Length: 202
Image (cartoon, rainbow, N blue to C red; front, side, top):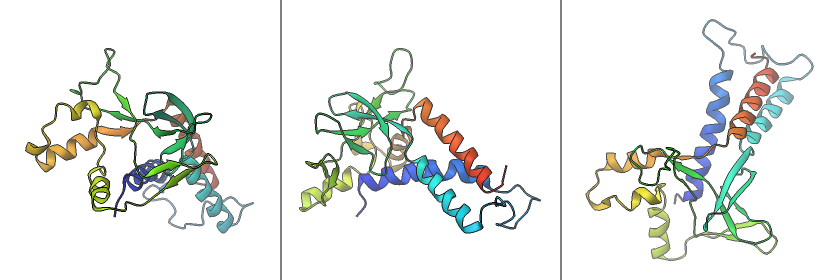
Protein backbone atom coordinates (compact mmCIF):
# COMPACT_ATOMS: atom_id res chain seq x y z
CA UNK A 1 0.00 0.00 0.00
CA UNK A 2 1.24 3.45 -0.92
CA UNK A 3 1.17 6.03 1.83
CA UNK A 4 1.68 9.77 1.81
CA UNK A 5 5.14 9.34 3.30
CA UNK A 6 6.27 7.30 0.29
CA UNK A 7 4.92 10.00 -2.06
CA UNK A 8 6.92 12.65 -0.22
CA UNK A 9 10.01 10.49 -0.32
CA UNK A 10 9.66 9.97 -4.06
CA UNK A 11 9.33 13.70 -4.62
CA UNK A 12 12.48 14.41 -2.63
CA UNK A 13 14.41 11.70 -4.41
CA UNK A 14 13.42 13.16 -7.77
CA UNK A 15 14.62 16.59 -6.66
CA UNK A 16 17.87 15.14 -5.33
CA UNK A 17 18.71 12.83 -8.19
CA UNK A 18 17.44 14.92 -11.10
CA UNK A 19 19.30 18.00 -9.96
CA UNK A 20 22.62 16.17 -9.94
CA UNK A 21 22.20 13.56 -12.63
CA UNK A 22 21.26 15.96 -15.42
CA UNK A 23 24.33 18.02 -14.61
CA UNK A 24 26.67 15.07 -14.27
CA UNK A 25 25.67 13.18 -17.43
CA UNK A 26 28.50 13.42 -19.99
CA UNK A 27 27.67 15.48 -23.05
CA UNK A 28 27.47 13.81 -26.48
CA UNK A 29 30.92 13.15 -27.82
CA UNK A 30 32.48 13.06 -24.36
CA UNK A 31 34.08 10.12 -22.65
CA UNK A 32 31.83 7.12 -22.09
CA UNK A 33 34.21 5.53 -19.61
CA UNK A 34 32.52 5.75 -16.16
CA UNK A 35 35.94 5.79 -14.50
CA UNK A 36 37.44 8.48 -16.75
CA UNK A 37 36.73 11.42 -14.50
CA UNK A 38 37.45 9.94 -11.08
CA UNK A 39 39.87 12.00 -9.03
CA UNK A 40 43.35 10.49 -9.28
CA UNK A 41 43.69 10.52 -5.50
CA UNK A 42 40.42 8.67 -5.01
CA UNK A 43 39.64 5.18 -6.24
CA UNK A 44 36.44 4.60 -8.23
CA UNK A 45 34.69 2.80 -5.36
CA UNK A 46 35.57 5.47 -2.81
CA UNK A 47 34.51 8.22 -5.21
CA UNK A 48 31.15 6.56 -5.86
CA UNK A 49 30.59 6.03 -2.15
CA UNK A 50 31.24 9.71 -1.48
CA UNK A 51 28.98 10.64 -4.40
CA UNK A 52 26.19 8.58 -2.87
CA UNK A 53 26.64 10.46 0.40
CA UNK A 54 26.36 13.75 -1.47
CA UNK A 55 23.05 12.64 -2.95
CA UNK A 56 21.83 11.76 0.53
CA UNK A 57 22.87 15.19 1.77
CA UNK A 58 20.61 16.72 -0.89
CA UNK A 59 17.72 15.43 1.20
CA UNK A 60 19.08 17.11 4.33
CA UNK A 61 19.13 20.74 3.18
CA UNK A 62 17.31 23.43 5.16
CA UNK A 63 13.59 22.70 5.05
CA UNK A 64 10.59 24.72 6.17
CA UNK A 65 8.27 22.77 8.44
CA UNK A 66 4.79 23.86 9.52
CA UNK A 67 2.85 22.77 12.57
CA UNK A 68 -0.87 22.22 12.16
CA UNK A 69 -1.51 25.56 13.88
CA UNK A 70 0.81 27.43 11.51
CA UNK A 71 4.11 27.78 13.38
CA UNK A 72 7.19 27.74 11.14
CA UNK A 73 10.37 25.77 11.86
CA UNK A 74 13.50 25.53 9.71
CA UNK A 75 15.35 22.24 10.19
CA UNK A 76 17.26 19.70 8.08
CA UNK A 77 15.14 17.73 5.65
CA UNK A 78 14.51 14.01 5.94
CA UNK A 79 12.87 11.21 4.00
CA UNK A 80 9.70 11.23 6.08
CA UNK A 81 8.87 14.91 5.70
CA UNK A 82 8.04 15.30 9.36
CA UNK A 83 9.88 16.25 12.55
CA UNK A 84 9.06 16.59 16.23
CA UNK A 85 8.99 20.26 17.21
CA UNK A 86 11.60 20.90 19.91
CA UNK A 87 10.10 21.86 23.23
CA UNK A 88 6.50 20.92 22.41
CA UNK A 89 6.72 17.28 21.35
CA UNK A 90 4.28 18.02 18.50
CA UNK A 91 4.74 17.07 14.88
CA UNK A 92 5.67 19.59 12.19
CA UNK A 93 5.33 18.82 8.49
CA UNK A 94 7.42 19.85 5.49
CA UNK A 95 5.76 22.83 3.80
CA UNK A 96 4.06 22.47 0.44
CA UNK A 97 2.98 25.29 -1.84
CA UNK A 98 0.15 25.64 -4.35
CA UNK A 99 1.09 26.93 -7.80
CA UNK A 100 -2.50 27.12 -9.06
CA UNK A 101 -2.74 30.66 -10.53
CA UNK A 102 -6.38 30.78 -9.45
CA UNK A 103 -5.78 29.38 -5.95
CA UNK A 104 -8.05 31.25 -3.52
CA UNK A 105 -5.29 31.04 -0.93
CA UNK A 106 -2.73 33.10 -2.88
CA UNK A 107 -1.36 36.08 -0.98
CA UNK A 108 -2.01 39.71 -2.03
CA UNK A 109 1.60 39.95 -3.25
CA UNK A 110 0.96 36.83 -5.38
CA UNK A 111 2.99 34.52 -3.14
CA UNK A 112 1.62 30.96 -3.15
CA UNK A 113 -0.18 29.44 -0.20
CA UNK A 114 2.06 27.35 2.04
CA UNK A 115 0.48 24.44 3.86
CA UNK A 116 1.48 21.36 5.87
CA UNK A 117 0.50 17.86 4.87
CA UNK A 118 -0.33 16.00 8.09
CA UNK A 119 -0.34 12.22 8.04
CA UNK A 120 -2.35 10.59 10.84
CA UNK A 121 -0.14 7.51 10.83
CA UNK A 122 2.94 9.34 12.10
CA UNK A 123 3.31 10.07 15.80
CA UNK A 124 5.82 11.64 18.17
CA UNK A 125 7.74 9.24 20.38
CA UNK A 126 8.68 10.14 23.97
CA UNK A 127 12.35 10.32 22.95
CA UNK A 128 11.62 13.10 20.43
CA UNK A 129 11.80 10.96 17.31
CA UNK A 130 9.05 10.18 14.83
CA UNK A 131 7.20 6.88 14.76
CA UNK A 132 5.00 5.39 12.05
CA UNK A 133 2.15 2.97 12.51
CA UNK A 134 0.41 1.01 9.78
CA UNK A 135 -3.32 1.38 9.01
CA UNK A 136 -5.15 -1.24 11.08
CA UNK A 137 -8.76 -0.99 9.92
CA UNK A 138 -10.59 -0.79 6.62
CA UNK A 139 -11.45 2.83 7.33
CA UNK A 140 -7.79 3.65 7.91
CA UNK A 141 -6.82 1.86 4.71
CA UNK A 142 -9.32 3.99 2.81
CA UNK A 143 -8.00 7.10 4.55
CA UNK A 144 -4.42 6.26 3.60
CA UNK A 145 -5.45 5.75 -0.02
CA UNK A 146 -7.46 8.99 -0.08
CA UNK A 147 -4.56 10.96 1.39
CA UNK A 148 -2.17 9.68 -1.26
CA UNK A 149 -2.62 12.78 -3.44
CA UNK A 150 -1.45 16.20 -2.27
CA UNK A 151 -4.37 18.60 -1.91
CA UNK A 152 -4.22 22.34 -1.42
CA UNK A 153 -6.63 23.10 1.44
CA UNK A 154 -7.69 26.41 -0.14
CA UNK A 155 -8.42 24.91 -3.55
CA UNK A 156 -10.20 21.99 -1.91
CA UNK A 157 -12.87 24.36 -0.60
CA UNK A 158 -13.91 25.33 -4.12
CA UNK A 159 -13.40 22.01 -5.91
CA UNK A 160 -16.20 19.64 -6.89
CA UNK A 161 -14.40 16.33 -6.43
CA UNK A 162 -17.38 14.26 -7.60
CA UNK A 163 -17.48 16.06 -10.96
CA UNK A 164 -13.74 16.26 -11.66
CA UNK A 165 -12.16 14.29 -14.46
CA UNK A 166 -8.97 12.31 -13.76
CA UNK A 167 -7.06 14.95 -15.76
CA UNK A 168 -8.44 17.79 -13.64
CA UNK A 169 -7.65 15.90 -10.45
CA UNK A 170 -4.08 15.30 -11.63
CA UNK A 171 -3.66 18.97 -12.53
CA UNK A 172 -4.61 20.04 -9.00
CA UNK A 173 -2.10 17.53 -7.68
CA UNK A 174 0.62 18.80 -10.02
CA UNK A 175 0.09 22.38 -8.82
CA UNK A 176 1.14 21.27 -5.32
CA UNK A 177 4.91 21.21 -4.87
CA UNK A 178 7.32 20.98 -1.98
CA UNK A 179 8.35 24.45 -0.89
CA UNK A 180 12.08 25.07 -1.39
CA UNK A 181 13.79 27.67 0.77
CA UNK A 182 16.22 30.01 -1.04
CA UNK A 183 19.13 28.72 1.04
CA UNK A 184 18.11 25.13 0.25
CA UNK A 185 18.33 25.83 -3.47
CA UNK A 186 21.80 27.27 -2.94
CA UNK A 187 22.84 24.32 -0.79
CA UNK A 188 21.69 21.87 -3.47
CA UNK A 189 23.57 23.83 -6.12
CA UNK A 190 26.82 23.59 -4.13
CA UNK A 191 26.30 19.88 -3.48
CA UNK A 192 25.72 19.29 -7.20
CA UNK A 193 28.95 21.14 -8.00
CA UNK A 194 30.80 19.06 -5.41
CA UNK A 195 29.29 15.92 -6.91
CA UNK A 196 30.52 16.81 -10.39
CA UNK A 197 33.99 17.72 -9.13
CA UNK A 198 34.22 14.45 -7.22
CA UNK A 199 33.57 12.41 -10.35
CA UNK A 200 35.71 14.69 -12.51
CA UNK A 201 32.83 15.79 -14.71
CA UNK A 202 33.37 19.51 -14.39
